[in-house]
Image 1: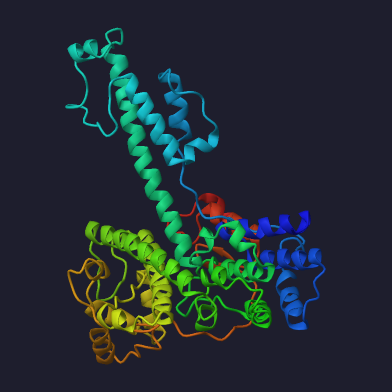
Image 2: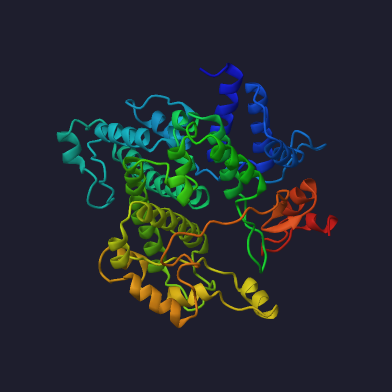
Length: 457
């Protein structure tokens, strides 16, 4: 059993898997964890962690970041539940967290519906309401038409709210999956089975959760020298490492080789399910407003937020799926079923920036445009074998293996650690206090700046 201090630090690291803590602050927690264990760190790990933790909020003079340290949470149904408890005698006052629990919200809607003879899903205001005779027959004769209609409308709005909440919660999970794979779904017992594994997973996840920078170049790579030092500790103690937990976030050949076929299959089933769920999101966004597939540049009416979140989740899920299929030796399936990657939508100003700096569309965009749509492939409506992907890649001079079109993502070399920048709508700002002022003033948002911005311009 770990000491109370060690367990508390492990709990904090585990909680960070659903937050957006800066890598520097996670590195500081890892330092505290090793100190609480009395562990002797090798020089490389100690140096790498110190380099990152030097810039943690605990050591900075202002101890402040302008960026939210969690993913945006959907607005719950607390207000609707409070109103329902005042209108329906069968609905008690509920704690605040009930408004974020879809199961409890649905239970309230069903229970309250019984009071007015309404079944769940009966939302047609013209067809599903009871008339006077039906209300009398149902024992509701003492309720006036006005009171009945008020309660009926309330439950109809609550069902609509529940549907929105489920959708937004799913989008939040998709966003975390795209950036951190299955880290957010790791149970504490599996995460804490080995402290070195937990440290690597928490730090790598914090790097994956970093926000994108407004640039015409490549985004910052996730795997850096701190992650490399932490992973080296796993290499040096393979018998102690929880490789199954690590495979949730880092599915390299080296990691998967230590995982049993049973656990590999369990992960494959989860990623299969995620691929189908994300494909539904992509198809829904496409059907609401088909994109300019040949360029993937945003046009008016495109839901770029939903598309880009889903595209990132699709590519992450696809990369894990490919790695697991390769490790399990399922080459025949990959030969027949090889769905393509999905590019993100690019803002028109960034596309123009690319052109002005001598660049152009990424070659992957052309490959994507010539392949069947992913959801059509998953449903079996169109075929997408490996040979088709290779032929399209050859046509556009793209290496299908190095580009991860027909193979798992290649293992990358660690990059040097760099401080997490303060961002305002993707633009780097040196000072977090200045960043807060610029954000509140609407600077870099693409909208008109408020008068307060003039003080800072």
